Image (cartoon, one colour):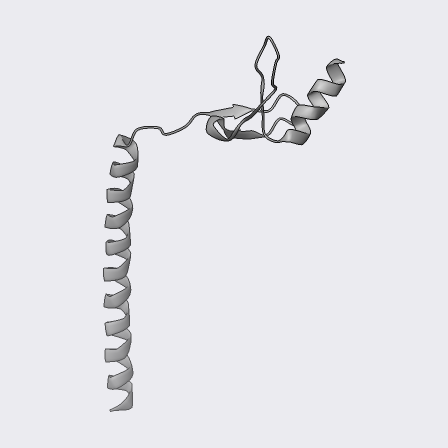
Length: 85
């Protein structure tokens, strides 16, 4: 009797895991479809000082310069400007 109960429990657990796996796989496919058709909100740019990539919308700009390099932080901007002076 106990062995039969264990076998039924194991069978229910295996079925549950299969259903969960298929549901997660289906959600992942739906998520990929939404992401592929979504427009790009921002472009990644590279800091010329430290080499870090960051969104262009969060860039720190050097004020009053003829060229306009983009920096990830005020520290990198200041280091760039001090190195040029």
